[in-house]
Length: 126
Image (cartoon, rainbow, N blue to C red; front, side, top):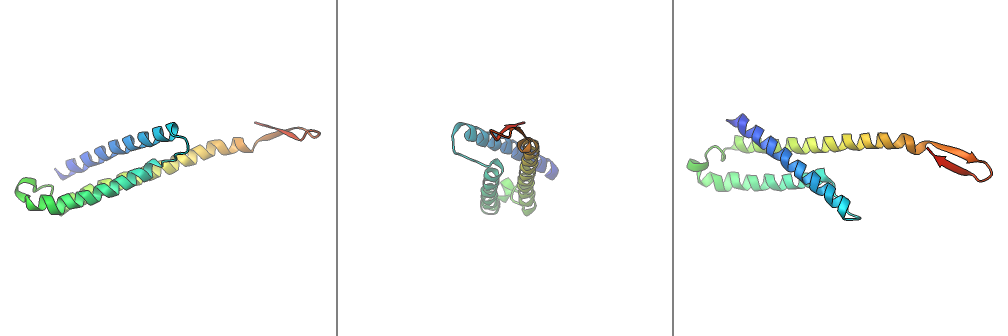
């Protein structure tokens, strides 16, 4: 049962990550001058979710152990926190790989310039 809850937490966190990344991308495209970093926004939301989850687990669910017994345990909270942390780590890793691939594609072309004429000192980018 614990593994099923953990996998559900991971899948739901990845779905939330996709929603946040898409929303940040749309905002960056539509609003000029805005530079939202999707993984950072998701990390902030995940930190807020962990704090609210801790409040629910140890304050609200702890008072009603007969009804929410499986959710009020410390091991369930640790599993949910691990799911949040794993999703944040994957978001930052994916962002760094994407940034590295983008810069690798752009940097060789940016450095190639053909001098066209010594008189005009013009350059033709390749």
